[in-house]
Image (spheres, rainbow, N blue to C red):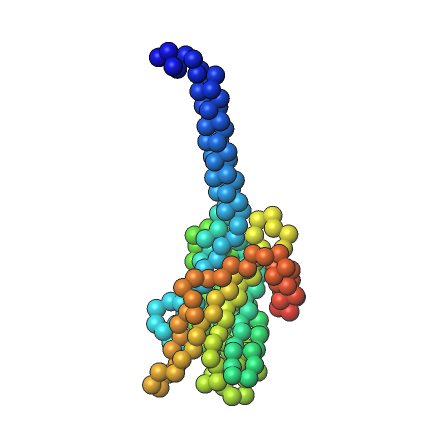
Length: 200
């Protein structure tokens, strides 16, 4: 007890430093959590099946709603890469839809909402028109989703690459990575503006 009384000022100083450290850590956790809430996060996944008829799903894992503005498709062949917009549905798809909003892949996506943006073969159709060799030449397909989120000045986006491999009498499709790449660097997001203008 006497030792505590003799060193009360030192103990008080250490207590103050400890309290300050706790508050600094708390502030860092709060700021980190707040910044995560401001970030847009999209998931691009393949639905049931592993063929080109499988559906492609986009899920909004952001804190707030996001407006899907454009969908781009990139087909990789041994010789080149073809990039084309795939925002609008094709004639074959449109016949299955009666409402105008169903004929486009644009539109708002609420938090935790999932949207079916069509089969991979339908998404690939516009780019395949530029490929005389046909779908058999495709080695990989990349889906890019661009959107507008909250107060962000630049467009947000995400991409995922799927590898195409021949199997018996059909083509199989599987993700090149387990997760979806988020496009968050400012220079990359500025480049997205050119992609959006291409799709207007």
